[in-house]
Image 1 (tube, rainbow, N blue to C red):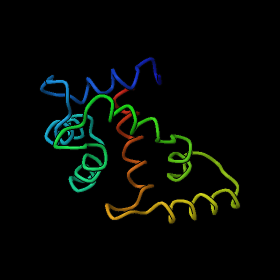
Image 2 (spheres, one colour; image 1 turned 90 degrees about the vertical axis):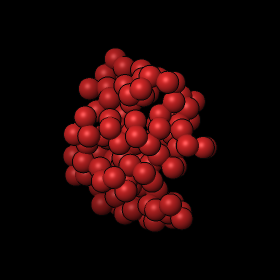
Image 3 (cartoon, rainbow, N blue to C red; image 1 turned 180 degrees about the vertical axis):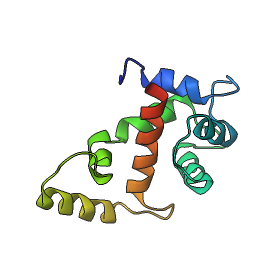
Image 4 (tube, helix red, strand yellow; image 1 turned 180 degrees about the horizontal axis):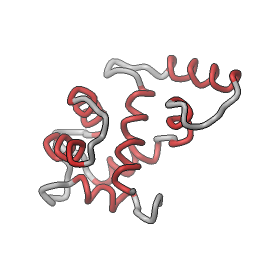
Length: 120
């Protein structure tokens, strides 16, 4: 729970057509409505990373957002202080976390942005 909105309630905000699953169109539309700073390509990669088929279920949404670390994302955006040694360690860990769909840290940042905007 964050800002008095659960992850499941956040899911409901992104399920624009209220069919119990988040399509790519739902996610793209929500990103526009919430004025999130995500490119369509970022949204497509995020959706692909969460969905086991063409849609994101509530369970997949909860699992994906539970993995996001808001503190590290805020620090990577310069919104929280961190000593240089810890920042270097985080950068190295992010480099190791890259996969064929793109940078894992970028996906995490996108997920945190979505979660934060849905809740607040």
